[in-house]
Image (cartoon, rainbow, N blue to C red):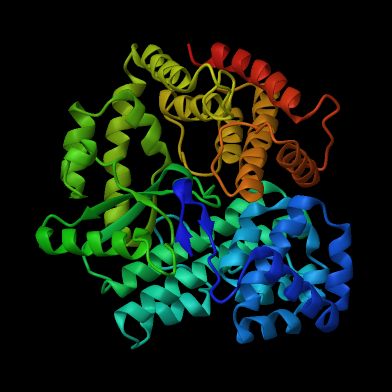
Length: 474
């Protein structure tokens, strides 16, 4: 495949004279070899038919791939809505037709009877430095004697497979978004753990998550916000090189794609600061230099690989940051000014995250209250954090329920944006087909309809959320 702008890909199949000719050859062969798929194509809308033809065309260029398509032709016939509803999943199949076998797994009786989780989630934050119930492929990647390049390629292939399987389950089962995000988060955690093992599982190093990975809401196409912390007695230069190797294993783009982008700029002093820091450095930075926005950011801190002791020391250092701003009378105004900057950055365009009353309002409310009132623990999803604020009496129960509903709506629609379009979009697009697909899948996942349309549902929710924000962040 050849890369186009904004992460799109276009498959360039060899040996096919022209699209019209190749499609005729393909359809004639498909009619003979897989009549059920051929007949079902007639019911697809034009975008869905185009996606399916691209997938079949990419498989047709290889006898081995075409044989795989024929082997799973029944699963394809049962999954045609995928080609209509999800450019993300269709594009994966175009580029990697062997993933068609996943469709059969998703529709198997075993898969329908299960809850759909890939493997067990890791244990509590600092009790275990390695995930429980590990996926056997990640386990092989971590511990096999295969050469480095082979293990990295397998790491990327397997993570891609897990994300494809998770997205396919979302369409097939219409499960709640937090179940989906839990699954993709678990896949990301295991990938980081495997990359840490490939790098030699060095003593004296810990990898902690921030952002969406920190709150266990990692999504398709998310970046991983990571913080690398080391023991002050360790060889800092050596551990910095290992941290760079781990980032390279996860984020470098190759023929097998990448696992996910890694962002380490939330460390002290951002991109100008040292990549690997010690708990003592964090303590000093948090006590004097850190800004109010960092107090909100570090509420999402969570160990994902490496030393549990370093994880605990880092969490203890963060308490200095929280205590400093909880006692600062200027903290609420600083939070509001920071939120306004984010809102202005995308205005006048609407954004599910940054518009007034959008997802960032809900996130800021929960983080602000957790810091301001010294609530512990601060971990968990946005839903967890909101209800912890409510249970401690700093957020009205009715307000928590409203924000919880809004957060689920925003998270769902944001997830569906990615699933349908293959992009991390800010708002609904104008193309009718994409808007209808987003509305249909969102309604299926949420188990509700939008009487005035999804856009109006979002805008009305924005208004209600902003009222709660103004009452609580003041």
